[in-house]
Amino acid sequence: MAEVKKGPLFITNTLTRRKEEFIPLNPPHVGMYVCGPTVYSDVHLGNVRSFITFDILYRWLTHMGYKVRYVRNITDVGHLVDDVDAGEDKIAKRARLEQLEPMEIVQKYTNGFHDVMRLFNLRNPNIEPTATAHLIDQIGMVERIVKNGYAYEANGSVYFDVPKYAEQYAYGELSGRKIDELIANTRDTEGMEEKRSPLDFAIWKKADPHHLMKWPSPWSEGFPGWHLECSAMSTKYLGRTFDIHGGGMDLKFPHHECEIAQSVAADGHAPVRYWMHGNMLTVNGRKMAKSEGNGFTPEELLTGNHKLLEKGYSAMTVRFFMLQCHYASTLDFSNAAMQAAEKGLERMMKAVALLDTLKPVPGEAVDLAALEQRCYEAMNDDLNTPVMIAELFEGVRIINSVNDGNMAMDAHGIARLKGLFHSMLFDVLGIQSTIGATNGANDETALDGLVKEFIRMRAEAKAKKDFATGDAIRDRLVALGILLKDTKEGTTWERA
Ligand SMILES: [Zn+2]
Image (cartoon, rainbow, N blue to C red; front, side, top):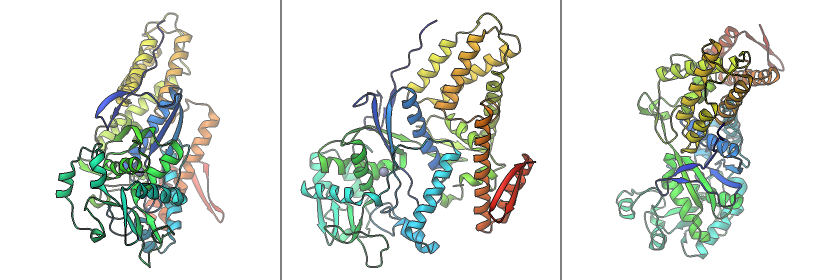
């Protein structure tokens, strides 16, 4: 039987706009940085899609035998409402509105983010650094940029000198923006009178006396600019040049463009060899956004409690739905598409479960090595998960044919097919078994985790006095044979 060729991997590098062979700087090690959430509100489904994209990359690199150091940060300071140098800090604003300490807001939404990541079965990064825990590194970076002449102080704030940088380096290289066009599109914002050019951006901001989150620095009591943390923390944990930097398409400019400029200005090196950007999620053809009323949360998705949802969908259905689209394409969310994904996943899971009871029939009518090969080729072609899933459906067709007695397959073939589904569907695509295809103990743990997640969401809904959602969660669990018991110590569950 032909040997399966497992490499090489090609990924689309946003920087060169080309599909390139991935060659790590120090194999077998791979350094990978992904911009994490700003923890001032619940993540919406569009954010989840972006994180799933890089979860797939992490899983695939690991599957390919690389030793990956995956860093994904938590932004807990410095991200202003305008996404530029103006407006209130997003976290401080939420703290004011909810009458909590900023760090309570940070903890609350960090916990919520982790719950969502667990629910959608994302692997944890190896390091999850926070901006507030890396003030010294950020101040050090500002000092290096100032020393090298690419930033200047004005009234206690420090600004990055974009025109000066652009004299020597290609500012706009990643996003394809031109300096002249950028200047033409600038508008008046806070701090404008301090800047030498409207393109300059703050890397350190002096805080107003009433500002809640501020730290001492050589320039003023203040806080770092939003772009700075990613440069400082990626340098600290992955080195001055590392392999892969990922994030959502909307971060390409200004955030990632500024990250490149800061690293080059501070240390003289382009920081990243491969930039990768995931595309957006739309809803019925419109961009997902809270202001559009279509930015539903994972919780609303599971319960179906949103005017755009015909019913609730499981986290694995959503994950499967997302992976049926290539990460670089926009993906449109609709009830029809979700229901198709739900049916497809169910059909696949049923076939995988059949593998345990399939009776071997001497002979081997199909070339499983070729199927395996096509799975590798799909993933190595810029993480083409939709093609991979199509190949797995070919596997489903084979299983069903053997089960119906229309195709021969010996015990070795059945074991090989089982191995293929376990590695590609469960390990690489991160789909969790929804029926008894894994051993019983794992199922129990997974079930317990899931029910506890629903209990937590119900408690949260009740705390917000949203009793309709609370009751809907309880009723749906009852329909699934799960009874909740409210006690003084909290809520427990048992089977009906
Ligand atoms: Zn970032």
